[in-house]
Length: 222
Length: 200
Image (cartoon, rainbow over all chains, first blue to last red; front, top):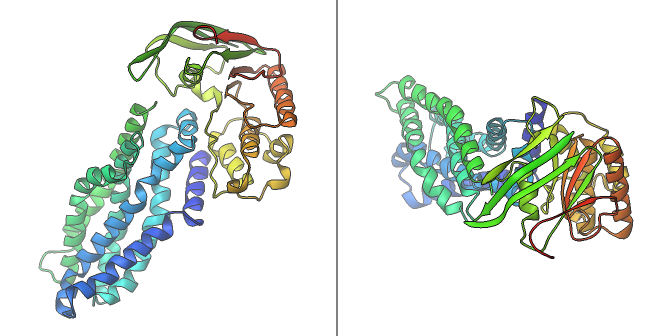
Protein backbone atom coordinates (compact mmCIF):
# COMPACT_ATOMS: atom_id res chain seq x y z
CA UNK A 1 0.00 0.00 0.00
CA UNK A 2 2.75 2.44 0.92
CA UNK A 3 4.32 1.76 -2.48
CA UNK A 4 1.13 2.82 -4.25
CA UNK A 5 0.77 5.86 -2.01
CA UNK A 6 4.34 6.86 -2.89
CA UNK A 7 3.56 6.51 -6.61
CA UNK A 8 0.37 8.59 -6.33
CA UNK A 9 2.15 11.27 -4.31
CA UNK A 10 4.98 11.47 -6.81
CA UNK A 11 2.74 11.71 -9.87
CA UNK A 12 0.55 14.41 -8.33
CA UNK A 13 3.61 16.37 -7.28
CA UNK A 14 5.07 16.22 -10.80
CA UNK A 15 1.73 17.20 -12.36
CA UNK A 16 1.39 20.24 -10.11
CA UNK A 17 4.94 21.54 -10.65
CA UNK A 18 6.12 23.72 -13.50
CA UNK A 19 5.75 21.89 -16.80
CA UNK A 20 3.34 19.36 -15.31
CA UNK A 21 0.07 18.55 -17.02
CA UNK A 22 -2.52 19.58 -14.42
CA UNK A 23 -2.74 23.28 -15.26
CA UNK A 24 -2.55 22.75 -19.02
CA UNK A 25 -5.71 20.63 -18.99
CA UNK A 26 -7.73 23.22 -17.05
CA UNK A 27 -6.50 26.06 -19.26
CA UNK A 28 -7.47 24.12 -22.36
CA UNK A 29 -10.91 23.36 -20.89
CA UNK A 30 -11.33 27.03 -20.04
CA UNK A 31 -10.34 28.14 -23.54
CA UNK A 32 -12.60 25.70 -25.38
CA UNK A 33 -15.64 26.56 -23.29
CA UNK A 34 -15.01 30.31 -23.39
CA UNK A 35 -14.79 30.21 -27.19
CA UNK A 36 -18.14 28.44 -27.56
CA UNK A 37 -20.46 31.37 -26.75
CA UNK A 38 -18.60 33.43 -29.34
CA UNK A 39 -19.10 30.73 -31.97
CA UNK A 40 -22.74 30.00 -31.15
CA UNK A 41 -23.79 33.63 -30.83
CA UNK A 42 -25.83 35.48 -28.22
CA UNK A 43 -28.78 33.06 -28.24
CA UNK A 44 -29.16 32.32 -24.54
CA UNK A 45 -31.73 29.55 -24.96
CA UNK A 46 -29.50 27.75 -27.44
CA UNK A 47 -26.49 28.10 -25.14
CA UNK A 48 -28.45 26.60 -22.26
CA UNK A 49 -29.42 23.67 -24.42
CA UNK A 50 -25.89 23.10 -25.68
CA UNK A 51 -24.23 23.88 -22.33
CA UNK A 52 -23.88 20.36 -20.90
CA UNK A 53 -22.65 18.97 -24.22
CA UNK A 54 -20.04 21.72 -24.55
CA UNK A 55 -18.80 21.21 -20.99
CA UNK A 56 -18.59 17.46 -21.50
CA UNK A 57 -16.74 17.75 -24.80
CA UNK A 58 -14.34 20.25 -23.28
CA UNK A 59 -13.66 17.97 -20.33
CA UNK A 60 -13.18 14.96 -22.60
CA UNK A 61 -10.64 16.72 -24.80
CA UNK A 62 -8.86 18.30 -21.83
CA UNK A 63 -8.45 14.96 -20.08
CA UNK A 64 -7.11 13.37 -23.28
CA UNK A 65 -4.64 16.21 -23.75
CA UNK A 66 -2.40 15.18 -20.88
CA UNK A 67 -3.19 11.47 -20.80
CA UNK A 68 -0.75 10.43 -23.52
CA UNK A 69 2.17 11.27 -21.22
CA UNK A 70 0.84 8.96 -18.50
CA UNK A 71 3.29 6.13 -19.25
CA UNK A 72 5.43 7.76 -21.93
CA UNK A 73 7.30 10.00 -19.49
CA UNK A 74 8.13 7.03 -17.26
CA UNK A 75 9.19 4.97 -20.25
CA UNK A 76 11.55 7.65 -21.55
CA UNK A 77 13.46 8.09 -18.31
CA UNK A 78 13.60 4.40 -17.41
CA UNK A 79 11.21 4.60 -14.44
CA UNK A 80 8.83 2.20 -16.16
CA UNK A 81 11.53 -0.51 -16.13
CA UNK A 82 11.87 -0.22 -12.37
CA UNK A 83 8.10 -0.09 -11.87
CA UNK A 84 7.73 -3.28 -13.95
CA UNK A 85 10.45 -5.03 -11.92
CA UNK A 86 9.12 -3.97 -8.54
CA UNK A 87 7.20 -6.03 -6.00
CA UNK A 88 4.04 -4.05 -6.68
CA UNK A 89 1.82 -5.78 -9.27
CA UNK A 90 1.86 -3.80 -12.51
CA UNK A 91 -1.95 -3.68 -12.58
CA UNK A 92 -2.06 -1.88 -9.23
CA UNK A 93 0.73 0.47 -10.26
CA UNK A 94 -1.26 1.33 -13.41
CA UNK A 95 -4.39 1.96 -11.35
CA UNK A 96 -2.41 4.18 -8.96
CA UNK A 97 -1.00 6.20 -11.86
CA UNK A 98 -4.46 6.67 -13.37
CA UNK A 99 -5.90 7.70 -10.01
CA UNK A 100 -3.10 10.24 -9.56
CA UNK A 101 -3.76 11.57 -13.06
CA UNK A 102 -7.46 11.95 -12.31
CA UNK A 103 -6.80 13.71 -9.01
CA UNK A 104 -4.34 16.14 -10.59
CA UNK A 105 -5.98 16.71 -13.98
CA UNK A 106 -9.61 15.55 -13.66
CA UNK A 107 -10.70 17.11 -10.37
CA UNK A 108 -9.64 20.66 -11.40
CA UNK A 109 -11.96 20.34 -14.42
CA UNK A 110 -14.89 19.58 -12.13
CA UNK A 111 -13.95 22.47 -9.86
CA UNK A 112 -13.85 24.83 -12.86
CA UNK A 113 -17.28 23.72 -14.12
CA UNK A 114 -19.44 26.09 -11.98
CA UNK A 115 -17.49 29.10 -13.25
CA UNK A 116 -17.83 28.01 -16.85
CA UNK A 117 -21.53 27.25 -16.35
CA UNK A 118 -22.08 31.02 -15.98
CA UNK A 119 -20.70 31.60 -19.47
CA UNK A 120 -23.13 29.07 -20.92
CA UNK A 121 -26.21 30.51 -19.19
CA UNK A 122 -26.66 27.42 -17.00
CA UNK A 123 -28.54 27.93 -13.73
CA UNK A 124 -27.43 26.54 -10.37
CA UNK A 125 -29.26 23.24 -10.74
CA UNK A 126 -27.96 22.61 -14.26
CA UNK A 127 -24.38 23.43 -13.26
CA UNK A 128 -24.62 21.13 -10.28
CA UNK A 129 -25.97 18.36 -12.51
CA UNK A 130 -23.13 18.73 -15.01
CA UNK A 131 -20.52 18.84 -12.24
CA UNK A 132 -22.01 15.74 -10.67
CA UNK A 133 -22.02 13.81 -13.97
CA UNK A 134 -18.42 14.91 -14.59
CA UNK A 135 -17.48 13.67 -11.13
CA UNK A 136 -19.01 10.30 -11.92
CA UNK A 137 -17.85 10.12 -15.55
CA UNK A 138 -14.33 11.57 -15.80
CA UNK A 139 -12.77 8.62 -13.92
CA UNK A 140 -14.08 6.42 -16.73
CA UNK A 141 -12.37 8.69 -19.28
CA UNK A 142 -9.07 8.43 -17.42
CA UNK A 143 -9.22 4.69 -16.81
CA UNK A 144 -10.18 3.79 -20.39
CA UNK A 145 -7.79 6.38 -21.78
CA UNK A 146 -5.03 4.68 -19.83
CA UNK A 147 -5.32 1.67 -22.17
CA UNK A 148 -4.50 3.89 -25.14
CA UNK A 149 -1.67 5.54 -23.21
CA UNK A 150 -0.16 2.12 -22.48
CA UNK A 151 -0.44 1.08 -26.12
CA UNK A 152 1.19 4.31 -27.25
CA UNK A 153 4.26 3.68 -25.07
CA UNK A 154 5.86 1.35 -27.58
CA UNK A 155 5.32 3.80 -30.45
CA UNK A 156 7.12 7.06 -30.79
CA UNK A 157 4.78 9.96 -31.44
CA UNK A 158 1.88 7.79 -30.35
CA UNK A 159 -0.10 10.77 -29.08
CA UNK A 160 -2.40 11.02 -32.09
CA UNK A 161 -2.82 7.27 -32.24
CA UNK A 162 -3.91 7.37 -28.64
CA UNK A 163 -6.66 9.87 -29.41
CA UNK A 164 -7.88 7.69 -32.28
CA UNK A 165 -7.88 4.60 -30.06
CA UNK A 166 -9.45 6.18 -27.02
CA UNK A 167 -12.12 8.49 -28.41
CA UNK A 168 -14.39 5.65 -29.65
CA UNK A 169 -14.16 4.03 -26.21
CA UNK A 170 -15.30 7.25 -24.58
CA UNK A 171 -18.48 7.57 -26.68
CA UNK A 172 -20.72 5.72 -24.16
CA UNK A 173 -19.43 7.91 -21.34
CA UNK A 174 -20.16 11.02 -23.39
CA UNK A 175 -23.68 9.83 -24.31
CA UNK A 176 -24.75 9.00 -20.78
CA UNK A 177 -22.93 11.95 -19.22
CA UNK A 178 -24.75 14.46 -21.43
CA UNK A 179 -28.02 12.51 -21.22
CA UNK A 180 -27.97 12.60 -17.42
CA UNK A 181 -27.21 16.33 -17.39
CA UNK A 182 -29.99 17.07 -19.90
CA UNK A 183 -32.41 14.93 -17.93
CA UNK A 184 -31.73 16.97 -14.82
CA UNK A 185 -32.21 20.26 -16.67
CA UNK A 186 -35.08 19.71 -19.09
CA UNK A 187 -36.47 16.24 -18.49
CA UNK A 188 -38.59 14.35 -19.41
CA UNK A 189 -36.38 11.36 -18.62
CA UNK A 190 -35.38 10.77 -15.03
CA UNK A 191 -31.84 11.69 -13.93
CA UNK A 192 -31.33 8.39 -12.16
CA UNK A 193 -31.21 5.96 -15.08
CA UNK A 194 -28.50 7.53 -17.26
CA UNK A 195 -26.56 8.56 -14.14
CA UNK A 196 -26.53 4.97 -12.87
CA UNK A 197 -25.25 3.75 -16.22
CA UNK A 198 -22.56 6.44 -16.11
CA UNK A 199 -21.46 5.23 -12.68
CA UNK A 200 -21.50 1.65 -13.97
CA UNK A 201 -19.25 2.63 -16.89
CA UNK A 202 -16.78 4.13 -14.42
CA UNK A 203 -16.83 1.02 -12.25
CA UNK A 204 -16.26 -1.26 -15.25
CA UNK A 205 -13.36 0.90 -16.40
CA UNK A 206 -11.74 0.65 -12.93
CA UNK A 207 -11.44 -3.08 -13.51
CA UNK A 208 -10.74 -3.32 -17.22
CA UNK A 209 -8.45 -0.27 -17.54
CA UNK A 210 -5.62 -1.38 -15.23
CA UNK A 211 -5.74 -4.99 -16.45
CA UNK A 212 -5.61 -4.01 -20.11
CA UNK A 213 -2.97 -1.33 -19.57
CA UNK A 214 -0.71 -3.69 -17.61
CA UNK A 215 -1.14 -6.40 -20.25
CA UNK A 216 -0.21 -4.02 -23.04
CA UNK A 217 2.79 -2.68 -21.10
CA UNK A 218 4.02 -6.23 -20.51
CA UNK A 219 3.50 -7.11 -24.14
CA UNK A 220 5.40 -4.03 -25.19
CA UNK A 221 8.47 -4.82 -23.05
CA UNK A 222 11.52 -4.40 -25.15
CA UNK B 1 23.00 -17.65 -3.48
CA UNK B 2 23.69 -18.67 -7.04
CA UNK B 3 22.46 -16.95 -10.19
CA UNK B 4 22.80 -19.07 -13.28
CA UNK B 5 21.70 -19.03 -16.90
CA UNK B 6 21.58 -22.06 -19.17
CA UNK B 7 21.53 -21.91 -22.95
CA UNK B 8 20.00 -18.46 -23.20
CA UNK B 9 18.96 -17.34 -26.65
CA UNK B 10 18.27 -13.71 -27.27
CA UNK B 11 16.44 -12.44 -30.33
CA UNK B 12 15.92 -8.71 -30.88
CA UNK B 13 14.01 -7.40 -33.85
CA UNK B 14 14.15 -10.75 -35.64
CA UNK B 15 17.95 -10.93 -35.33
CA UNK B 16 19.69 -13.43 -33.07
CA UNK B 17 21.90 -11.40 -30.72
CA UNK B 18 23.46 -14.37 -28.94
CA UNK B 19 22.59 -18.02 -28.59
CA UNK B 20 23.38 -20.76 -26.10
CA UNK B 21 24.87 -18.41 -23.53
CA UNK B 22 25.74 -19.92 -20.15
CA UNK B 23 26.79 -18.00 -17.08
CA UNK B 24 26.98 -18.45 -13.37
CA UNK B 25 27.66 -16.18 -10.42
CA UNK B 26 27.57 -16.87 -6.69
CA UNK B 27 27.25 -14.64 -3.61
CA UNK B 28 30.14 -12.29 -3.15
CA UNK B 29 31.13 -12.48 -6.79
CA UNK B 30 31.11 -9.86 -9.51
CA UNK B 31 30.66 -10.84 -13.13
CA UNK B 32 31.89 -8.34 -15.71
CA UNK B 33 30.06 -8.80 -18.99
CA UNK B 34 32.21 -7.63 -21.88
CA UNK B 35 31.93 -7.66 -25.64
CA UNK B 36 31.84 -5.28 -28.55
CA UNK B 37 28.98 -2.82 -29.10
CA UNK B 38 25.79 -4.60 -30.06
CA UNK B 39 26.94 -7.97 -28.74
CA UNK B 40 24.03 -8.08 -26.28
CA UNK B 41 25.45 -6.96 -22.92
CA UNK B 42 22.49 -4.75 -22.12
CA UNK B 43 20.11 -7.39 -23.49
CA UNK B 44 21.56 -9.96 -21.08
CA UNK B 45 21.01 -7.64 -18.12
CA UNK B 46 17.46 -6.90 -19.24
CA UNK B 47 16.80 -10.63 -19.67
CA UNK B 48 17.90 -11.22 -16.08
CA UNK B 49 15.77 -8.29 -14.91
CA UNK B 50 12.74 -9.79 -16.65
CA UNK B 51 12.44 -6.78 -18.95
CA UNK B 52 13.03 -8.98 -22.01
CA UNK B 53 11.72 -12.44 -22.62
CA UNK B 54 14.37 -15.00 -23.59
CA UNK B 55 13.78 -16.85 -26.86
CA UNK B 56 15.16 -19.96 -25.19
CA UNK B 57 16.99 -21.18 -22.10
CA UNK B 58 16.41 -20.37 -18.46
CA UNK B 59 17.72 -18.05 -15.76
CA UNK B 60 17.47 -19.12 -12.15
CA UNK B 61 18.35 -17.79 -8.75
CA UNK B 62 18.98 -20.41 -6.10
CA UNK B 63 19.02 -19.52 -2.43
CA UNK B 64 17.10 -16.26 -2.76
CA UNK B 65 13.75 -15.46 -1.22
CA UNK B 66 11.47 -18.30 -2.25
CA UNK B 67 8.27 -16.32 -2.72
CA UNK B 68 9.81 -13.60 -4.84
CA UNK B 69 10.66 -13.56 -8.52
CA UNK B 70 14.20 -12.95 -9.69
CA UNK B 71 13.33 -9.44 -10.94
CA UNK B 72 11.97 -8.49 -7.52
CA UNK B 73 15.35 -9.26 -5.97
CA UNK B 74 17.33 -7.22 -8.48
CA UNK B 75 18.42 -3.62 -8.70
CA UNK B 76 18.73 -2.46 -12.29
CA UNK B 77 20.96 0.51 -13.03
CA UNK B 78 20.49 1.24 -16.71
CA UNK B 79 21.47 3.94 -19.16
CA UNK B 80 18.36 5.85 -18.26
CA UNK B 81 18.48 6.98 -14.68
CA UNK B 82 14.76 7.02 -13.72
CA UNK B 83 14.98 10.51 -12.25
CA UNK B 84 12.28 13.17 -12.54
CA UNK B 85 13.70 16.61 -13.28
CA UNK B 86 10.78 18.34 -11.54
CA UNK B 87 11.46 16.60 -8.23
CA UNK B 88 14.31 17.41 -5.86
CA UNK B 89 17.17 15.02 -5.20
CA UNK B 90 15.67 14.01 -1.87
CA UNK B 91 12.18 13.53 -3.33
CA UNK B 92 13.48 11.36 -6.16
CA UNK B 93 15.34 9.11 -3.77
CA UNK B 94 12.61 8.88 -1.15
CA UNK B 95 10.06 8.02 -3.86
CA UNK B 96 12.10 5.02 -5.02
CA UNK B 97 12.76 4.01 -1.41
CA UNK B 98 9.02 4.11 -0.70
CA UNK B 99 7.96 2.48 -3.94
CA UNK B 100 10.50 -0.34 -4.13
CA UNK B 101 9.87 -1.29 -0.51
CA UNK B 102 11.51 -4.16 1.34
CA UNK B 103 14.41 -3.65 3.67
CA UNK B 104 15.28 0.01 3.69
CA UNK B 105 18.14 2.17 4.83
CA UNK B 106 18.27 5.82 5.68
CA UNK B 107 17.95 7.91 2.50
CA UNK B 108 20.17 10.70 3.83
CA UNK B 109 22.92 8.18 4.57
CA UNK B 110 22.63 6.94 0.99
CA UNK B 111 22.99 10.50 -0.27
CA UNK B 112 26.05 11.24 1.84
CA UNK B 113 27.62 7.94 0.75
CA UNK B 114 27.52 9.15 -2.86
CA UNK B 115 28.50 12.72 -1.92
CA UNK B 116 25.18 14.40 -2.74
CA UNK B 117 24.04 15.31 0.78
CA UNK B 118 24.61 19.02 0.08
CA UNK B 119 22.09 18.94 -2.80
CA UNK B 120 19.08 17.30 -1.15
CA UNK B 121 16.70 20.14 -2.01
CA UNK B 122 18.05 20.85 -5.48
CA UNK B 123 15.70 19.88 -8.35
CA UNK B 124 17.17 16.95 -10.29
CA UNK B 125 16.95 19.06 -13.46
CA UNK B 126 20.05 20.96 -12.32
CA UNK B 127 22.25 17.92 -11.74
CA UNK B 128 25.18 17.14 -14.00
CA UNK B 129 25.44 13.74 -15.72
CA UNK B 130 27.85 12.51 -13.05
CA UNK B 131 25.62 13.72 -10.23
CA UNK B 132 22.60 12.01 -11.80
CA UNK B 133 24.57 8.79 -11.88
CA UNK B 134 25.55 9.25 -8.22
CA UNK B 135 21.90 9.75 -7.33
CA UNK B 136 20.98 6.51 -9.15
CA UNK B 137 23.70 4.74 -7.18
CA UNK B 138 22.16 6.10 -3.96
CA UNK B 139 18.99 4.21 -4.91
CA UNK B 140 20.94 0.93 -4.79
CA UNK B 141 22.06 1.78 -1.27
CA UNK B 142 18.73 2.92 0.10
CA UNK B 143 16.77 -0.24 -0.70
CA UNK B 144 18.41 -3.62 -0.18
CA UNK B 145 18.39 -6.00 -3.14
CA UNK B 146 20.85 -8.92 -3.27
CA UNK B 147 21.46 -8.81 -7.04
CA UNK B 148 22.79 -5.66 -8.71
CA UNK B 149 22.51 -5.45 -12.49
CA UNK B 150 24.69 -2.57 -13.63
CA UNK B 151 24.85 -1.28 -17.18
CA UNK B 152 28.04 0.73 -17.76
CA UNK B 153 27.90 1.90 -14.13
CA UNK B 154 30.99 4.07 -14.18
CA UNK B 155 30.01 6.20 -17.19
CA UNK B 156 30.07 9.93 -16.36
CA UNK B 157 31.59 9.33 -12.92
CA UNK B 158 34.80 11.19 -12.15
CA UNK B 159 37.84 9.39 -10.72
CA UNK B 160 36.78 10.01 -7.14
CA UNK B 161 33.29 8.83 -8.06
CA UNK B 162 34.65 5.63 -9.58
CA UNK B 163 36.67 4.92 -6.43
CA UNK B 164 33.60 5.63 -4.30
CA UNK B 165 31.50 3.27 -6.44
CA UNK B 166 34.15 0.54 -6.34
CA UNK B 167 34.13 0.78 -2.53
CA UNK B 168 30.32 0.53 -2.46
CA UNK B 169 30.41 -2.50 -4.76
CA UNK B 170 33.01 -4.16 -2.53
CA UNK B 171 30.77 -3.57 0.51
CA UNK B 172 27.81 -5.05 -1.35
CA UNK B 173 29.80 -8.17 -2.30
CA UNK B 174 31.12 -8.50 1.25
CA UNK B 175 27.54 -8.49 2.58
CA UNK B 176 26.74 -11.50 0.40
CA UNK B 177 25.48 -9.62 -2.65
CA UNK B 178 26.05 -10.42 -6.26
CA UNK B 179 26.91 -8.07 -9.12
CA UNK B 180 26.53 -8.46 -12.85
CA UNK B 181 27.92 -5.47 -14.71
CA UNK B 182 28.10 -4.76 -18.41
CA UNK B 183 31.20 -2.71 -18.89
CA UNK B 184 34.01 -1.54 -21.14
CA UNK B 185 36.01 0.23 -18.47
CA UNK B 186 37.58 -1.70 -15.59
CA UNK B 187 35.19 -1.88 -12.63
CA UNK B 188 37.89 -1.29 -10.05
CA UNK B 189 37.00 -4.46 -8.14
CA UNK B 190 37.96 -8.07 -8.52
CA UNK B 191 35.64 -9.61 -11.07
CA UNK B 192 35.28 -12.58 -13.36
CA UNK B 193 34.88 -11.85 -17.05
CA UNK B 194 32.02 -13.11 -19.18
CA UNK B 195 32.69 -12.36 -22.82
CA UNK B 196 29.78 -12.29 -25.22
CA UNK B 197 30.30 -12.67 -28.94
CA UNK B 198 33.67 -12.69 -30.68
CA UNK B 199 36.81 -10.77 -29.89
CA UNK B 200 36.14 -7.20 -28.79
